[in-house]
Structures are given as C-alpha cells and as structure tokens.
Image (tube, rainbow, N blue to C red; front, side, top):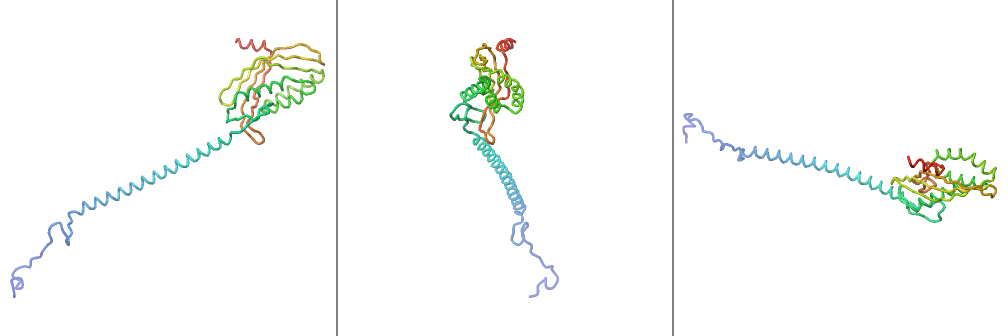
Length: 236
C-alpha cells in the first residue's frame, strides 16, 4: 500500500527514546554513580595513607622499644660482684650503688694503707693505696710521698693510725665523701714519741668495670690535717 509517506506528502516521524534514557540505560542515575565512585576511590586512597602512616609509626615504635630493651640488657650486664679491698668475700653490686658495708670496709683499708706504715712496708702500703687513686691524684700523691718515704726509712719511723670517728656521706650518684678523725701514734726505733690527732678527708667514686677490673672505689681526693685545724674550719 502506498501511503502519504511514500507519496512524499507527509514527513516520516522518528521515534526517540524516553527523556533521560539511552539504549535502555537511565542516564539520570549517572551523576550519582560518578559521585559514588569518586567517593569510594577517595576513601580507598585515604585508607591507604592511614595504613602507611600507621605502619611507619609502628615500625618506628618497634625500633625505639628494641633499642631501649637492648640498652636495659646492657645495663643489666653491668651488674657484677666486687671484692672489697681487704675483705675476702664477694659483695653484690649494681651500677653506682654498693652496700654501705662495702664502702666502710674500703675506707678502713684505705686509711690503714695511709697511716699504718713502717720503714719496711711504707713502699708497699703507699703503692697499694695509689693503685686505688685517680690518675691525677696518683701522680700528686707519689710526688709528695717521696720525701716522707725517705724520712721514714732513714729514721726508722713507725706510725700507727687508730680511727676514732668516721662519717660516710653519699650523693646518690656513685660518689662518697669520707671524713675520719684518727689518732696517730709515732715510734722511732721502737721508742714512743707521742701521738697527734688528725682529720682525714677523702672523696671516693664508684668506677664502672673496665678491662681487668671490676667495680671498684676510686680515691679522687685525699687530705690530711690536724684535728684542731679541722674543728676550726667546721666552726666557720
């Protein structure tokens, strides 16, 4: 049949899809989908950044804690047993801390090496005492003791030191301040010459272990004066 269209009388009518649709797809939902995908990608990217930051933080925390643990292990390994001078027994010690009895025994031994001397043992006594001194004090002590040793040997002098009072103060960081009041009896060729009262001051430091030595007390300062001079200074 030949109709109006075929005859060219009426233009052909073209069918168009419903508004907002294309090939059966509803284009009105496309903006919402794009926004959803963008938000999803943004969330994933943010999550990746958060995971990366947390990973770096946890790794740093692990490294710091392991370093701290290794440091504590090294501190624990510093704990040793020390042998007090003149005491035939071991004493437990921790860094910068030893029992009061150890310090007291060491002080007695140091004072004995300093004050109980004869012409026959003064070299040995002063040498043993100097081994416990700091390098600076050792040089000074041996230089000053040279004339004393010569006099003791030449005149046959013997001295006996008796400690009458002793005070030990600690600063809590491995240092000890010693003040001792003593009586020094002097003999020359077995003849008693009399006695003198004196005050002896020392500053001791607990020194960490090193090659060939355990924890030990080092004499950093040593002074010796008459008791009267010491009492006069205390008044001021």
